[in-house]
Image 1 (cartoon, rainbow, N blue to C red):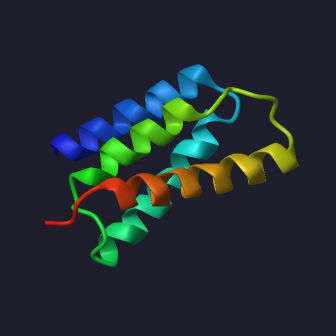
Image 2 (cartoon, rainbow, N blue to C red):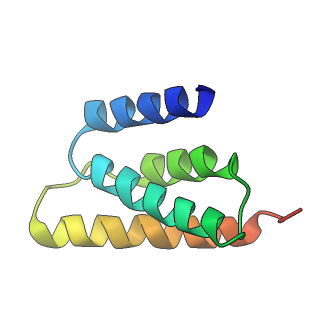
Length: 88
């Protein structure tokens, strides 16, 4: 329940910031869940990585190309950040 609450709060933050931030949040979340399911990160790393990726995203201008780039950049951000996490 705590994780769901954190995720809901992150989504609200992304919506309030607007622009490309919700796209980045979604891409980061999908990538973090993928890494978790493949044993690369812990479950509780997911909200940490998602928040960091969405905070790193500029609001920007919403165009198709920018949406695709924001999604890809957020996924890359999560993969790189996850490599720095020590899997225990």
